[in-house]
Length: 400
Image 1 (cartoon, one colour):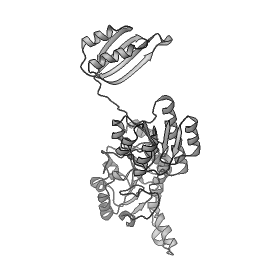
Image 2: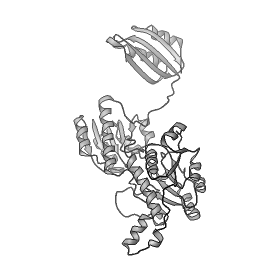
Image 3: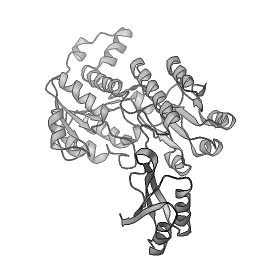
Image 4: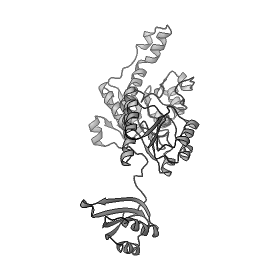
């Protein structure tokens, strides 16, 4: 199995892949046209990316591509729709960078409260201003509002409680039991969190539903002088609404992600938010600790090895949770060559579109049972023809 790594993975992970029989080619920072060209030339079965975008054109040239692994939790840099249409699995590595991102979120909170970057810059520039920088409130006893309770959100809550902060939270998956286990107060909506919290930290996935989640209404609900932390994706925050809130309510923000982030690793940088004294920008480094990167690399390697050995894809994000199947036909049959081929031929003639299929074999391999879920109109004549096939023992059909 040919594996193209468009990001640097540790030597130990590469060795494990090679030990599993993979042909590995690592070209860190492949992107754009260079990625497309390499995919066309190398024709890998597996592609691993971190921040590199994988677009429709890439899938078009990589005709043998079977699996894309996003070395991280989010996967919005991969055209999942095109991957699904071409039968390419997409997997991620969730939870492996949670501690790292949570550490940065807490760091941004403390930096905002104590104006740490401004302290350092003034000191470097020969300015001493203890009178200004000695007026921080402190975070003990303040209320942190956590929007989203994935792995990162939970890690942030754990650290916030270690700082003696109160925590309120919202998540679509919130239950009373989950709130009790985490020691947080559950609220009914993100707006409720914004209104209740002194500091809001965002930890939701970036998708159509969460785009602009922190918008005008959200910022209007926030307290005067409150903090907003975003370490998820820039699209979750409406930056125009945020700037209005900064001007009108003295909202202060810590952003590891924002609009028009540079695509390069290093170089000249200019952004309007960088000049705003109420905004602390970091360089999208939430997951960028040595510990997190090694854990992510190991998980990416595990996904690939498992797929190469079994065909199963751990952490797959683009399998349908519900198919269009309307009926299930169950066929008990002798475990002989050609039985299922004849069954599938009858299903094809009936124009039933198979959505899911499983065949299990009984002890001693004398008989088996096939479960076939399909979209189509059941027909007694088809069932009778399948029942009459040689080596078919019994047939049953049910509506789903």
